[in-house]
Amino acid sequence: MSTIADVAARAGVSKATASRALSGNGYVSDGTRQRVADAAAALHYVAHSSAISLATGRTQTVGLIMPPVDRWFFSELLAGVQDALFARDYELALYGIREGTDTRERLFDTVLPRRRFDGIIAVGIQPSAHELERLQRSQRPLVSIGPYSEGSSAVSIDDVAAARIATEHLIELGHADIAFVGGSTDADTLSFGDARRVEGYLEALRAAGLTARARLVEAPTTMPGGYGAAVELLGDRRHRPTAIVGVCDEAAIGAMIAARRLGIAVPTELSVVGIDDHQHAAMFSLTTIRQSPREQGQEAVRLLHARIAQPDAPLERVVPASALVVRSSTTAPRS
Image (cartoon, rainbow, N blue to C red; front, top):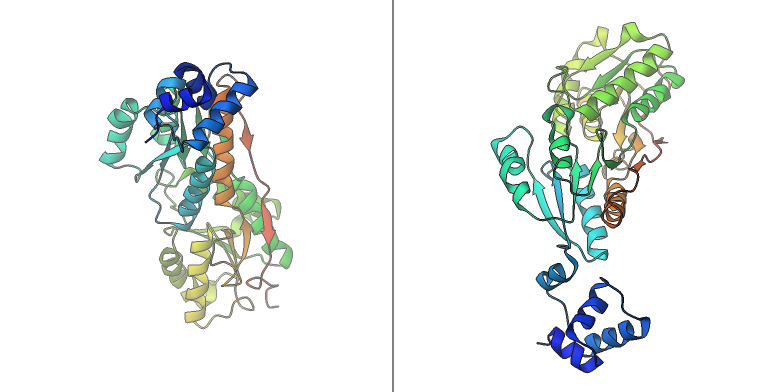
């Protein structure tokens, strides 16, 4: 196995020069850098991560803190982060731990302070836990993904706008009795992003003079959660809404399945809109607001790379547009 000494000898330079040429840390002329690169390629030399760390002061590792990746959004996000880090020769240290657990608290109290990272990406951090502030105190480059991003560079869709656009679509079709399904009705347990989506739903109703007809139906943000909530909501024929906005596509798809099992035709008797453009949204012909978690993950890595290169640069916030994707789950209500 070739060493840096072998590369230096073949290129006719010192070990220190060969190390600088391969790491990019420090001045080396273009000709020397190319000669060292050619020697390394000829010898099939690959620098060990610990050697790179010694030469550059960096670990080439990024910490990713997020909820468990058992939901589509987080698994897609992880794929985007991983692809972008791999393309930049960074390693990934993943911590997919559920909020409010002892393991999560130990992560912030003892694990993260001991680990060396070139930067951290934090996904879906809730303001009530003050975790983002704890990460900022570590003085490491930080990027957040999600609606709460105080004091860090961030990438996220505008959750208020997403839910407002979804609700406005139904109002423009003529619906006046529109229910919002998903999330918690308890302000203490409602996630920050879901609360923002509730805000957008209520904003659209308020603008249309429909505030008195608002209906918030609590449900887990999953297909079974949306299904269970919709079974109860749609079971009362006299008070059945003509349309539903799901807090996410999973909840919306669950509501569609419930409607069909109850013999309620979608969209002629019930229109349904989701948010996210889940991988199954097209299969269910679900009208939705598109966001791309994979692209958000890639963008977060770009922002973090910029923070690592220039820690004192101004913070950046990237907010992709919320695009309405109209499929066949929505139509005008029956007269």
